[in-house]
Length: 440
Ligand code: ADP
Ligand code: MG
Image (cartoon, rainbow, N blue to C red; front, top):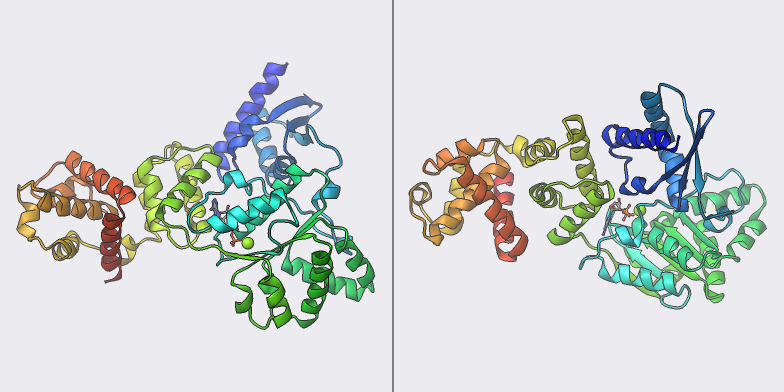
């Protein structure tokens, strides 16, 4: 019987992996199916956040998978194996009964956060605060533009703090929720309750405080909440899309409160960090894309991390429809719609022009037989760019460079790709060639 259950569960997992790759997480492999009786499948997980993720995000997909596999409708129950009554400490709704259930994302942990020069200070401060709330940096103010990991860090801090101190009282909310609670409390004449709730917290974490901009009464209330908690040495963590002083129409006294602890900025991730993030996200989804796909994504998507992740999801989704294998061709075509290729119709002769100018070589050299480094290297760069920026096959590209065969082009591509990973100057040169070709 147990074998039958294990078998069904395994098939459900494979179904999810194939049909709902965006939901799939590698920790699914650790889930234990506990029993299957009368159409009720009970599964057990060791983390509270996993339980909620399954219940809130995956229930429908699990029903569908089970239906497909067994031909019956199956209801799921998700059991948290070593927890009881955890709600109390995980969310403290303030002066409101009809509050949406909040849960921390199991994706947003320190373990899943990639540290690089762009976020090192913010990350270190969050770790310190999670270990000694109210003592290390108070308040901690994290800022950076959208999609750079503020919410991820804030939630990681909460989850880590709860690991150290299971009974800790935390409120994590967006500033918008805070403002809405406040307005509702005023309307219902429950301001007293509202204030009371915030005084019994060990840590308050408010995401996106730029939302306070121009909201004068909320600012006033926030100021008092802040002071009460601060004086009681409770930890306060805030995030915003800009520094305190840059938040438009924010009262000066709040600006100075926000500045009084540690202010840490998160910048855009550099190439290495982007590579590491794509690797991390792939690992979380239990996939192992080839290195050239990872570096293609990291090179093409350099603005925000959310987009990096979205691109990987898209490529993974396409691969699942197409046999499951992630290939560079597939990645290129997935990126194609948004990338320069379609928009600019870059030709090989444009690439040759740009490269001859940059490296001060002649076109006839690139197409000839000479193998000295001063010629071979620019030639390899040409092949690399031709493969990345045009839709020509390897054979066609080889044809443009003195009739070289496809393995030579592939070798050139890999060589330059690797050099871009390891050598900052080469990467800068290649990036500026790409930029000039895609802009012209
Ligand atoms: P923000 O709140 O700053 O707008 P998020 O925290 O929502 O950004 O991050 C957007 C996405 O990027 C999330 O999926 C998050 O996990 C991911 N992300 C951002 N920075 C990192 C990082 N350093 N390591 C891993 N994932 C990251
Ligand atoms: Mg956010």
